[in-house]
Structure formats: C-alpha cells, structure tokens
Amino acid sequence: MLHIIKKTLINFFFFSPLFLISDTKDISIVIHGGAGWFTSMTEEEIEGIEEALNIAADSGYELMLEGGTSLDAVERAIIILEDNPLFNAGRGSVYTSELRQEMDASIMDGSNLNAGAVASITNVKNPIKLARYIMEKTEHVMFSSKGAEKIAIEAGLETVSPSYFYSEEKLQRAKNKIKTNSKKGTVGVVALDAYGNIAAGTSTGGMTNKMPGRIGDSPIIGAGTWAENGVCGVSGTGHGEYFIRLNVAKEICVLMKYEKLDVKKAAQIVIDRLKSMGADGGVIALDENGTPAMIFNTPAMARAYKDSPDYTFVQIYKDN
Image 1 (cartoon, rainbow, N blue to C red):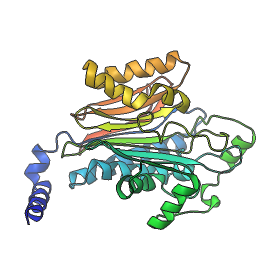
Image 2: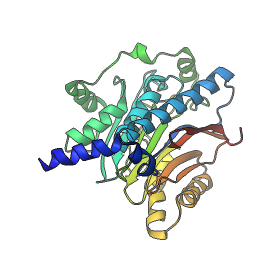
Image 3: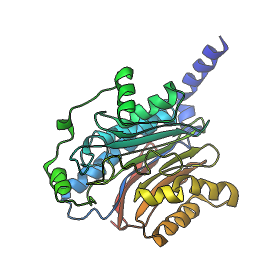
Image 4: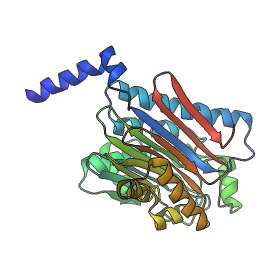
C-alpha cells in the first residue's frame, strides 16, 4: 500500500505544472554522435545529423519530464540514433574486414553502479536494448557474440538480417581497407532525471575494416561508459584502444570525486592526455547538477544538450 501511495504522489507531482516549473530544473541530457573530422559531408547529411541529435535530445528530455528515469531517457535517445544510418551504431554500423557488422554497447545506472554490456553482436537491431536487458534481467554485466545473441532471442528483442545494415558506401570503404570513417560516429547519451539519478550509455559499430572479434571501449564499463550518482556520467567516442588504456570515462569522474575538479576541467585534462598519447576522441559528461561537458580534440564532435523544454543546443564543428 505504501508503494502505491508513493507512486501516486510521484505521478501527481510529475504531471503538476508546479512540479514542472520548480522541481525539474536539473533534468538534463547530453548526446554525442561521434568525434572526428566529418569531412566531405553534403549539406543534407549535416542537416540529417543535426536533426537526429535534436530529436533524440528532445525525446529523452520529454520522457524525463513525464516522470521517466534517466535510464529510460538514455535508452530512448540511443535507440533513435541506432535506427538512423547516419551514425555508426545499430543500422549505420560499419563493416569489419569480413564484411559484416559486429556491434558493441553498454549502459550504466549511477544510482547503484549496475551495468550491462554487449560486444561483437551481429543481428540485434538495437544493441542498447540488449545491454539494458542484461543489466536488469541477468546476474552478469557483459555478454558477447553468440551468447549475447541467444539472450536477445530469449528476451524477444528484435533481430535483423545482414541486409538491414547494407550500405554500398560502407561496403566499399571496408573492401578498400579504410579503417576510419569521417562521416559516421559512435553514439552516446548521459542523462540526469528529476530523482537525481545519472545514467549513461554508448553504442557503436566499431572501426571500419576492424579485425573480427575486435572490441573497443564502448562496451567496457569505465572506459567508454560510466555513471555515478553525486559525481558524474560520461560517454566517450574515439580511438577505443586508448580509451581502454586510460580508462577514460571513470578517470574523469575520479578527478571530480577526489581532486574536486569541475566536470569541464576534468574532461579536458583526460582528453588532453589522450591527445598526448596520439589518440583522437571526445567525451560528453554531466555532473550531479546537470552541468555539461562536451570536450574533444578533433575538428568536430556531433553533440547536443538540453536542460529546458524550449531550447536544444546542437552543434557538429567547433565553430559553426
């Protein structure tokens, strides 16, 4: 009975105009769609990326305004980007050297440090859904390849055929052994909800022409994704091997937690360290108050931020 009363009160306040005015001031969401050069893009592609980021930010934010959690917002926003072929995640995932997709994803709940991740999956439409299912419905954190795909089927998640991922451009890049893709990037989301909970998630198709079985930082908790209430949430994008070696996502939160640095300073220090190691990349982050950091050492990082109902910041290059 107490649980029902509590839920009723929460629903009342969330749908109350007074609550929306006063108690949602810290609700915020920050998104990335990959860091890199984003060269040779048509105006249509640029507008498509910006529109997708805007839609994802608006959708995740509105869900939290309606009482949804930061986990809900992270999952919803990433699904929107996974379904968009302009990004290197889900449908837009690039080809490996064996000319197929191997996708990675992770999600983390800052309220209890619970996490779920998948690696090297080939036929799951939305890897972030599977990552969340693993976090909430199993006693484990990470599954890979056939084991992860078996769980997806058992969970009733949508699987797809190789044709779903087809792109002549991506295919030719893989055949020509081009290891980078200047147009499409890993996607990630960090959100802070009205309950004060931070969540983060990341999803990727990895590197073009990567060796089969290669796993980057995106599914590795602490490297590509981290969330911890009262400190920060982080999602990274870039040269995954270096993100793993530096444990980028958690390192930012460690600097904040123990060195008492603000989120932008902490993120800048870690990205500068990446650059000194010869690695390209960027991060998005939120602190416990919803203050964002969107730091990168490349000419561009597709990114968006929203902390109010009537405005969404969206930008790709350093200077538009």
